Image 1 (cartoon, each protein chain N blue to C red):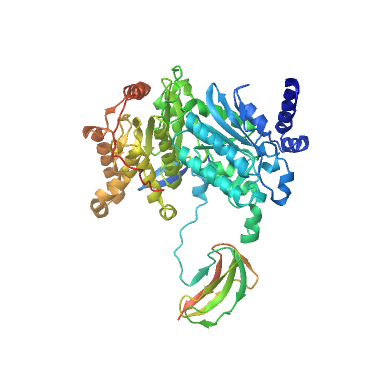
Image 2 (spheres, chains in turn orange, yellow):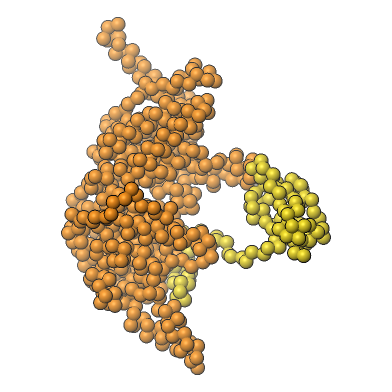
Length: 514
Length: 105
């Protein structure tokens, strides 16, 4: 064979495999409003940056006439590329090939790119679009899943792992995304569940649609399994690209620095924050008035909205922001908001991202449902992750910081490096009404006019204790600051914390209250 | 998210805020009534061995609830007399649905 013939042969082989499941299957995929695996990779990565590996991998299954079936690329495309010049490893399941089903060869392609990304120290992006296990391959298909989960776990905290759900992701398959750091879903396209509507109907006689069981809205609003919701695949890819700019390649690096930009809106506390601690405001307005270019990438926006988490930049450097949201549930900590914040804090700590905590909360959410749902162990997660974190920790108390909530929100006592407070801060063991009712119980109940006495006592307590100065007098906070100086104080604290070192006792790992 | 503000009580202070759907849909606490027995799992009532007014000894099988292809026997928690049956054979029940009310003897 001449070189020319060899090349022609090579091109025809390659073209055939790159066609995936064939024109009909591709048309079907597009008709569902879905891009093909190759289109997705092309849309997500920098133009021309994708380099594919293992195109010619084939399965070795001989049962059920599988030896007669050729599955192009074994239903998954793997390779490396760049996003805004930053390297990433990627795999994308190809639904047009045997429904993207996972057999051993398919899984081994994925584990190979996973091993690569860990060694290279680059983020991994997994695009999931698969009917599940390739049943013909039996237990080998299960082996494949297990080998992926194992690597997800070992890679956790070493490289950022992103999962993109662009089709069904059911049964065991859901546990790979669940073990990764960020899960992206798209309305009407993503479906995630352990057992599908059919099984639920047969076994439990409950009827539910796929969308109501495990659609994109369910996982971003109710279950909290997903972190980013998009209306289209294109929008989803923009979210991924944006996230990549905020996070480092691996746990030994820092996130990329950008030129510093002033916020688009300037901080006017009197316009944003009501003086009365019982009145709500949107804490995101504070974040946007402080961070570079007012650019805040919120994570899990619709889930446990009583706490706000996300990435922003201060003076060009990425920070992780955790903020109580007085607009929702008065900003209380509860089961879901503790889970949400705790996991985010651990991500930031693992990837050298300083933490900025904004505090305005009345405490933990009271209620039988919360106690029975385990608010003790879930609430403990936030204490654990703040205490455990050794990245620079800067806390700003905006307004109320009462009781256990005050301690939990990265107080000095949990190792905050800097604690600042606005003059509007109220750092106290509890709110004035509750405190007065306990401290002056006898005086109030024995008074001729209990309501009047209560009012006076509440006022007395408020004047004496609902301020930042007692905490400041005890050194629990480092400085009471003028709100207009907030950005300056935060940036200075970050700058001088750049080489922060905190040595801890050696251990295999801690035991967080999972 | 609900945009209408409501008052939320934390430690005697009323905070003006919005409630999440999850919070609004939470189940209010009810004190458990030991005489009322509920389905611990969704399934189908395969067989009922008791009727209203029937006495049963502690541990006596009162009915079979088939769920997840397994037959679960619902036994008398003590010596009882059946006060009310809320289901009949062949009924499909959801989790926590009331099945039977008994009086303790």
